[in-house]
Figure 1 (cartoon, helix red, strand yellow):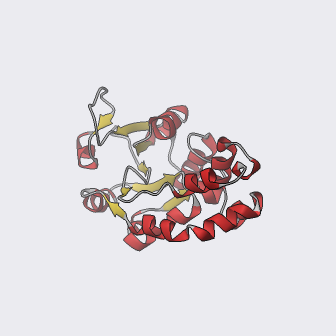
Figure 2 (cartoon, helix red, strand yellow):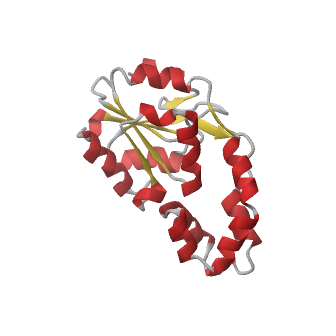
Figure 3 (tube, helix red, strand yellow):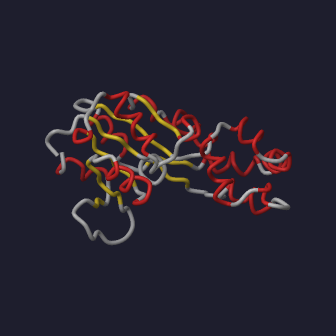
Length: 202
Protein backbone atom coordinates (compact mmCIF):
# COMPACT_ATOMS: atom_id res chain seq x y z
CA UNK A 1 0.00 0.00 0.00
CA UNK A 2 2.92 2.34 -0.66
CA UNK A 3 0.89 4.64 -2.91
CA UNK A 4 -1.73 5.56 -0.27
CA UNK A 5 -2.46 9.29 -0.04
CA UNK A 6 -5.88 9.30 1.59
CA UNK A 7 -7.12 7.27 4.56
CA UNK A 8 -10.85 6.99 5.24
CA UNK A 9 -12.28 5.88 8.56
CA UNK A 10 -15.66 4.63 9.65
CA UNK A 11 -16.82 6.09 13.00
CA UNK A 12 -18.85 3.89 15.37
CA UNK A 13 -17.16 0.58 16.13
CA UNK A 14 -13.97 1.87 14.50
CA UNK A 15 -12.98 5.11 16.25
CA UNK A 16 -15.60 5.31 19.00
CA UNK A 17 -17.98 3.01 20.86
CA UNK A 18 -21.28 3.51 22.67
CA UNK A 19 -20.80 2.18 26.19
CA UNK A 20 -24.48 2.37 27.15
CA UNK A 21 -26.38 1.53 24.00
CA UNK A 22 -30.13 2.10 24.17
CA UNK A 23 -30.77 1.31 20.48
CA UNK A 24 -32.74 4.53 20.60
CA UNK A 25 -34.17 4.69 17.07
CA UNK A 26 -35.01 0.98 17.05
CA UNK A 27 -36.83 1.44 20.36
CA UNK A 28 -38.96 4.19 18.81
CA UNK A 29 -39.85 1.95 15.89
CA UNK A 30 -40.80 -0.97 18.15
CA UNK A 31 -42.79 1.33 20.46
CA UNK A 32 -44.92 2.75 17.66
CA UNK A 33 -48.48 1.59 17.09
CA UNK A 34 -48.08 0.79 13.38
CA UNK A 35 -44.31 1.16 12.74
CA UNK A 36 -44.95 4.71 11.51
CA UNK A 37 -46.56 3.19 8.43
CA UNK A 38 -43.26 2.00 6.95
CA UNK A 39 -41.16 -1.18 6.88
CA UNK A 40 -38.08 -1.49 9.10
CA UNK A 41 -35.88 -1.12 6.01
CA UNK A 42 -37.69 2.04 4.90
CA UNK A 43 -37.51 3.44 8.43
CA UNK A 44 -33.75 2.94 8.73
CA UNK A 45 -33.22 4.54 5.32
CA UNK A 46 -35.26 7.58 6.38
CA UNK A 47 -33.48 7.90 9.74
CA UNK A 48 -29.97 7.57 8.32
CA UNK A 49 -30.39 9.58 5.11
CA UNK A 50 -32.05 12.70 6.55
CA UNK A 51 -31.54 15.37 9.18
CA UNK A 52 -33.89 15.21 12.14
CA UNK A 53 -36.27 17.83 10.77
CA UNK A 54 -36.77 15.82 7.59
CA UNK A 55 -37.12 12.55 9.48
CA UNK A 56 -39.89 14.10 11.55
CA UNK A 57 -41.58 15.42 8.40
CA UNK A 58 -41.34 12.09 6.55
CA UNK A 59 -42.72 9.99 9.41
CA UNK A 60 -46.00 10.31 11.37
CA UNK A 61 -46.59 12.69 14.27
CA UNK A 62 -46.20 9.68 16.55
CA UNK A 63 -42.47 9.62 15.77
CA UNK A 64 -41.99 13.12 17.13
CA UNK A 65 -44.04 12.29 20.23
CA UNK A 66 -42.03 9.13 20.97
CA UNK A 67 -38.75 10.91 20.23
CA UNK A 68 -39.54 13.62 22.78
CA UNK A 69 -40.84 11.11 25.32
CA UNK A 70 -37.65 9.02 25.24
CA UNK A 71 -35.10 11.79 24.51
CA UNK A 72 -33.41 11.37 27.92
CA UNK A 73 -32.31 7.89 26.83
CA UNK A 74 -30.74 9.30 23.67
CA UNK A 75 -28.89 11.89 25.75
CA UNK A 76 -27.59 9.14 28.04
CA UNK A 77 -26.52 7.06 25.05
CA UNK A 78 -24.62 9.94 23.43
CA UNK A 79 -22.91 10.83 26.72
CA UNK A 80 -21.59 7.27 26.94
CA UNK A 81 -19.66 7.48 23.65
CA UNK A 82 -15.92 6.91 24.17
CA UNK A 83 -12.89 6.88 21.88
CA UNK A 84 -10.95 3.62 21.60
CA UNK A 85 -7.59 3.85 23.41
CA UNK A 86 -5.26 4.11 20.43
CA UNK A 87 -7.34 6.47 18.27
CA UNK A 88 -5.97 9.93 19.10
CA UNK A 89 -2.35 8.81 18.90
CA UNK A 90 -2.90 7.05 15.55
CA UNK A 91 -4.81 9.97 13.99
CA UNK A 92 -2.20 12.45 15.20
CA UNK A 93 0.54 10.46 13.50
CA UNK A 94 -1.39 9.79 10.27
CA UNK A 95 -2.34 13.43 9.84
CA UNK A 96 1.35 14.27 9.30
CA UNK A 97 1.52 12.24 6.09
CA UNK A 98 -2.01 11.59 4.79
CA UNK A 99 -5.33 13.23 4.04
CA UNK A 100 -7.82 11.78 6.52
CA UNK A 101 -11.56 11.52 5.90
CA UNK A 102 -14.53 10.11 7.78
CA UNK A 103 -17.55 8.34 6.28
CA UNK A 104 -20.30 7.27 8.64
CA UNK A 105 -23.79 5.82 8.37
CA UNK A 106 -25.66 7.42 11.23
CA UNK A 107 -28.79 9.20 12.42
CA UNK A 108 -28.24 12.94 12.86
CA UNK A 109 -27.99 13.07 16.69
CA UNK A 110 -25.00 10.71 16.64
CA UNK A 111 -22.81 13.37 15.01
CA UNK A 112 -22.70 15.35 18.26
CA UNK A 113 -20.09 13.25 20.16
CA UNK A 114 -17.57 13.66 17.32
CA UNK A 115 -17.36 17.38 18.06
CA UNK A 116 -17.61 17.06 21.83
CA UNK A 117 -14.75 14.55 21.93
CA UNK A 118 -12.69 16.68 19.53
CA UNK A 119 -12.31 14.13 16.74
CA UNK A 120 -13.39 16.58 14.05
CA UNK A 121 -10.03 18.39 13.97
CA UNK A 122 -8.29 15.36 12.46
CA UNK A 123 -10.36 15.16 9.27
CA UNK A 124 -10.21 17.06 6.00
CA UNK A 125 -13.93 16.40 5.77
CA UNK A 126 -16.50 14.30 7.61
CA UNK A 127 -19.18 12.75 5.44
CA UNK A 128 -22.34 11.65 7.25
CA UNK A 129 -25.16 9.71 5.61
CA UNK A 130 -27.77 11.93 7.26
CA UNK A 131 -26.23 14.98 5.55
CA UNK A 132 -25.50 13.63 2.07
CA UNK A 133 -28.54 11.34 1.61
CA UNK A 134 -26.49 8.21 0.81
CA UNK A 135 -25.38 5.32 2.98
CA UNK A 136 -22.50 2.87 2.69
CA UNK A 137 -22.05 0.73 0.67
CA UNK A 138 -23.72 2.98 -1.94
CA UNK A 139 -21.07 4.26 -4.35
CA UNK A 140 -22.27 7.87 -4.12
CA UNK A 141 -21.04 8.37 -0.56
CA UNK A 142 -17.58 6.97 -1.41
CA UNK A 143 -17.35 9.11 -4.55
CA UNK A 144 -17.53 12.22 -2.37
CA UNK A 145 -14.13 11.32 -0.88
CA UNK A 146 -12.63 10.98 -4.36
CA UNK A 147 -14.06 14.38 -5.34
CA UNK A 148 -12.91 16.17 -2.18
CA UNK A 149 -9.46 14.54 -1.94
CA UNK A 150 -8.54 14.37 -5.61
CA UNK A 151 -7.12 10.89 -4.94
CA UNK A 152 -7.38 7.99 -7.38
CA UNK A 153 -9.02 4.75 -6.14
CA UNK A 154 -5.67 2.97 -5.66
CA UNK A 155 -4.48 5.89 -3.49
CA UNK A 156 -7.32 5.51 -0.96
CA UNK A 157 -7.47 3.18 2.04
CA UNK A 158 -10.79 2.47 3.81
CA UNK A 159 -10.79 1.23 7.40
CA UNK A 160 -13.94 0.09 9.17
CA UNK A 161 -15.54 -2.59 11.32
CA UNK A 162 -18.46 -3.45 9.02
CA UNK A 163 -17.75 -5.93 6.24
CA UNK A 164 -20.94 -5.02 4.38
CA UNK A 165 -20.68 -1.25 4.66
CA UNK A 166 -16.93 -0.61 4.71
CA UNK A 167 -15.18 -3.53 3.00
CA UNK A 168 -17.81 -4.21 0.34
CA UNK A 169 -18.18 -0.48 -0.31
CA UNK A 170 -14.43 -0.04 -0.72
CA UNK A 171 -14.15 -3.12 -2.95
CA UNK A 172 -16.86 -1.73 -5.23
CA UNK A 173 -14.81 1.46 -5.61
CA UNK A 174 -11.50 -0.41 -6.19
CA UNK A 175 -10.13 1.17 -3.02
CA UNK A 176 -7.68 -0.49 -0.65
CA UNK A 177 -9.33 -1.66 2.57
CA UNK A 178 -8.70 -3.05 6.03
CA UNK A 179 -11.41 -4.74 8.08
CA UNK A 180 -11.21 -3.90 11.78
CA UNK A 181 -12.13 -6.93 13.89
CA UNK A 182 -11.75 -5.83 17.51
CA UNK A 183 -13.37 -8.98 18.91
CA UNK A 184 -12.84 -12.50 17.60
CA UNK A 185 -10.41 -14.30 15.34
CA UNK A 186 -8.61 -12.86 12.35
CA UNK A 187 -9.09 -15.05 9.27
CA UNK A 188 -7.83 -12.85 6.43
CA UNK A 189 -4.73 -10.80 5.72
CA UNK A 190 -6.82 -7.63 5.36
CA UNK A 191 -8.11 -7.89 8.95
CA UNK A 192 -6.65 -6.03 11.94
CA UNK A 193 -7.40 -6.07 15.69
CA UNK A 194 -6.63 -2.41 16.35
CA UNK A 195 -5.64 0.80 14.59
CA UNK A 196 -2.11 0.65 16.00
CA UNK A 197 -1.49 -2.15 13.46
CA UNK A 198 -1.87 0.30 10.56
CA UNK A 199 1.82 1.14 10.40
CA UNK A 200 2.84 -2.26 9.03
CA UNK A 201 0.38 -1.88 6.13
CA UNK A 202 1.45 1.64 5.25
